[in-house]
Amino acid sequence: MSPANPDSLFDAERLRVYPRMTVAIYILAAIAVVATSTAMIDIFGKPLGYDFITFWAASHLTLAGEAAAAFDVQRIFAAEQLAVPAGDSIFLWNYPPTYQLVVAPLALLPYVAAYLVFVGASLAAYVLTLRRLFDERVANSRDAFFLLVAFPGAFVCVFHGQNSLYSVALFAGGLLAMERGRPYLAGFALGLLAYKPQLGLLIPIALIASRQWRVFFATGATAFGFAALATLVLGPDLWLAFLKNTPLVREVMEQGLLRWYKMPSAFIFFRYLGVPTSIAYALQVLTALGAAACVALVWWRAGPSRLAWAVLVAATLLVPPYTFDYELAILALVLVILAGDMVARGATTFEKAALVFLYVMPVLVAPISQATHLQIGFPALLLALALSVKRALAQADRLASLSSPAPL
Image (spheres, helix red, strand yellow):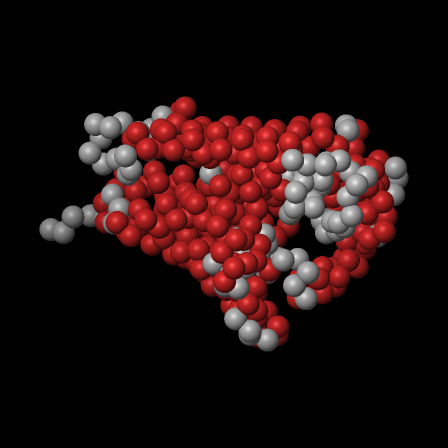
């Protein structure tokens, strides 16, 4: 950001220095965690790489020709102990065959090397795609890099060895391809989100509402082809094993065995407040329907604008009851778009404060929710959606007024 720009969103020096300081803290924290670990178990009693251990273990079983064994608690635990023999925590495998196909090669590498490759590639994809969306008035290329890497959502994702940076890169890739007039490439990027199907539930609504038919059919063809390839390689029985595992996932979530303080969904928010399970599910459904309605309205009114994409991504995070703090990394796309729009068109003090809060929020969700038994991530996601919808509709109204004929 240029200090001479009167429309600068925040102080240029702070935007330059603070992210670099944050990245340095992350590096020091990583060194400390590794240095204080024993037999690859950190001071919290978890294996280094955390959730990644189940990706590696599922890959090991898949390469051994026993893909369905990943859903067997004892078999996945035995495979995880091959990665970290001292580990005594069980990390369950709850992913569809599409993602199992993606992670299948991981166990060709030793556990630590596989983690570094997986996380390093996700960071690269995340930075390379989102840097292209930065408005130069917000940050130059180098500062944008540090802002992205310093984003706490990215840190939480990397710490867990999770896959959300790939998800946000696919969303950003779809956006960039559509902006460049490449609908089939956009559909290919969006169709690959079938590796986590819940992330693609609102995409058809957005594309139909905006009449982006080539992208719509390319997305559907890619998702179908992805699922067909997974079926061809891993066998149709794996889908049955995945579906059979669903009640277990639901039971584990409902009983709080998945750490509610890390789950920023409507269901968990209301369960923390003592709302009965059936009513909490109903409120989750209402939340999802409301999010879908926001997407339909904005994409119908505004078309595939950047702010419409912000609405789509923010709404997507509100749909599933089963979501975790590491998935808040996907908010990076929303924040980049909102920051650019605020610089270009101005923003209220509240909007600027909201943007800062949403930037730091991913790392606060777990500790604050654990201490207060109030899931703050859910209202934060509502805030992100509301801010995106407001600015998207305002932009649509401005464009409509400019295109309207002047009164005689």
